[in-house]
Length: 133
Ligand code: 5GP
Ligand code: ZN
Image 1: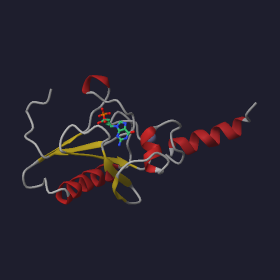
Image 2 (image 1 turned 180 degrees about the vertical axis):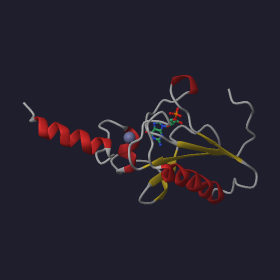
Image 3 (image 1 turned 135 degrees about the vertical axis):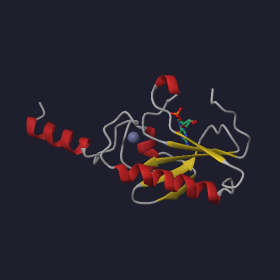
C-alpha cells in the first residue's frame, strides 16, 4: 500500500512536468533513452528527424517536459513560442526557409495526432498542397 503523502508528491511532480510520462516515446527521445537523429537541443526543447518522413525534410520539435497536446492547460506560453522559434531555425539549417516550409501541430484523432506528446512538425523540400487533407 503506497502512503497517500507519496501519491500526492508523485502527482504534484507529474503536474509540474517533473516526471517523465511513463511509456511516452517522445519523453524517451528527449531523455535519450530512445534513439533518434537529434538535430538540436536546449534546456526547453529537442528537435529530431521524423522516423517516417512525409517530405524530404521532416523534423519534429518537442518540449522536454511532457505536454500531451494543445488541449492541455499550458501555462508556459513562452515555451510554445520557443518551439516555433526553433522550428524556424531548423528550416534555415535545412535550407528550406526560402523555398518554403510548413509547421503543423496535430491535436487529437480527427487531426491525425498519433503521439500524445506535443510536437511541431517542420515539413519542406517539396510543394505542399492546400488545404491539407
Ligand atoms: P502525429 O501523427 O502525432 O502528428 O505525429 C507523430 C509523428 O511522430 C509521425 O510523423 C511519426 O512518423 C513520428 N514518430 C512516431 N514514432 C516515432 C519515433 O519513435 N521516432 C521518431 N523519430 N519519430 C516518430
Ligand atoms: Zn512525453
